[in-house]
Image (cartoon, rainbow, N blue to C red):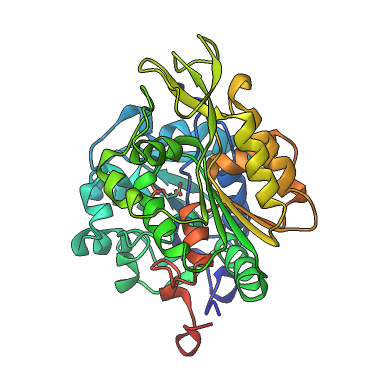
Length: 394
Ligand code: 3PG
């Protein structure tokens, strides 16, 4: 059980640092945000803190800049959307120097909000560096973790900081914890997992572990190429995580489904020479953009037999019409009310709401990897410090 949330503590005139997950998805090849879901989900906590007369300091990561500044991953890009949704002016702290940041925060009045620059511009964030965690903790009187989406990462702003300042849960993190715990305790078999999108490196270990506990795993989207290449197939210009080919090879199982056919194009655009082909027939200058019709039919036939479905990662480049059929068809099936359905992750949620199925799912989670690891029964590093000590196994 969550020990304390923002509702349980005194906040008036306190400086409150809130870890949010503003890792929003962007439209392919642009810096236009494609889904505001994660920002919207964080608003109740921010509004609550403002009402309670706190000075609010928001911090988040965006993308994977690997410890260096990148203009295209600055949280400045999120600022206009955040301000518009929140309806108040939000200051932006572009500095990466802690004494400057601290000075800016000291000038914040109660009810004012400031957004810090992308935490992953500091290499120390992902390393869970002790001094960096302490510096973050020293910025505020209160630390609120509302970043469910990144609670599976033992990073400084999620985990290390809690060694220096007692964390309390935000309203979003509490809501995710309660809903997912209920589903975890009561879900029934057969359980199917649908995995797409990129991030093969993250998901491969989850696939390895989940093969023992779930009934079927369906692979599509950006992950498919690595699985197909591991079977010795030609995948053209599709992005492959070569270092995982060996691991994928060892995963052969009757419970693991990979595409039979795919939609390919010779350009990463909503045009080009587009065709549907068997996975045995991808040309060297082509790339996989979606799962094909035979794959859709076979996945849907198997998904039909499920009782519980977890879905993380789209089946193709759903943002472009020519490659949206796979994601749309799977969304339509999963939305049927006979299933317990959990949808996780920025892009998947964006796809589901774009196609109009959002309200039909059992739970829409802001976490992709986080919701999968939670449902696997893992005690997540960002959640563990928030739990009541005698109920950690809850
Ligand atoms: C997510 O998008 O799943 C979270 O924001 C975590 O991001 P990460 O996978 O880059 O750690």
